Image (cartoon, rainbow, N blue to C red; front, side, top):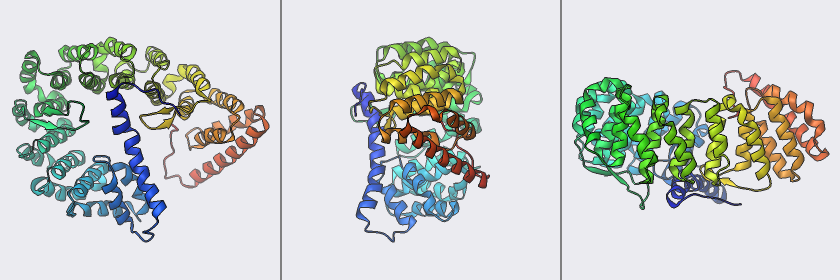
Length: 477
């Protein structure tokens, strides 16, 4: 297995935050449970508790999601999660608050307990997560509790309150006066991404971001924001201020121009990352920054900002042929993570990226006999390319490519893995089956048997889905 990575910051971010570290922790939980087998009678709640305590801070929703089916009903799962809000372990209380917030309306009955936690818990991490949960649940009285939390003694909790207010969007218009006051708050708080990067920023950053998410109803804050940008803040705060200006006044081009300049500058990689993220948040209203995004795509050589620019290009520039062409060019990049991000972005574009199918198919053929991992999700790049072909190509083209690939693959295990991707339930499963049946005779004898078995399983899955009409079908993307 090989990995062609980027620079130190990018490698850390992808491996530790998104990639191997998180997934390995979750895998470890499963492996330990299977290997030891010393608690065969553990209740679902006990399993959930252990999984939450073992997971990396802030990444609790992954193991929680995996264990939902262990409970007799969704209501029992929510109830069990809510019971952890009273646990003596502050880490578990924080985990429960975070997961409940991400469950959305299903967890609305936990709102009163989350308010109590925000106001009274003696652990700042638990209070921070409670604020975030209230922002996601968007209860009728959430805003007032979050405004009160802006006076919390912990800067970390105040940052969480700002973030949660921003999640309320224009429904938080009454918070604008308090947020304008917070624009003057220069106290630093740690967001602790990595020890070798700047891991602190001032609270005024979160205040500016919240005002941006409120949008046009925060118009009274514009003079403050424009003055901040004129005074030349550090680039991280500047990116938040520029984002807010662009969101509040769609006719003011200064915010987008500032973000484009930061993206093109040969300065802090993390500032460039912030600029790219904010441009993506602005979407098509940031179209004037497309030249800067293209510059980053072509010159940043596997950096984190380059990966983000791949992701945001369709959001900012639309899904037309010029965007597809730029992404296809980026597929030729030497960095595995860039290639993987291109495949994922094309897949999200679906049929809008159909013209990229020949290039993705050629890319697949070129890596067919190599096991290369896309670090961001620790997935085999060949599997990513196959998923992308299935998502963007018309059915005859997609099946033609796959049959050709199966003909070239002598490894029975690899052929089986390819067919398993094809077998995943999709909206066009019937079309895929019909096309496979037309082309199966073109495969070599060994592959032909595997394809016929795959067709049987796809038919059985199709019948099962028809028997359960209430369940949604996967898109295959």
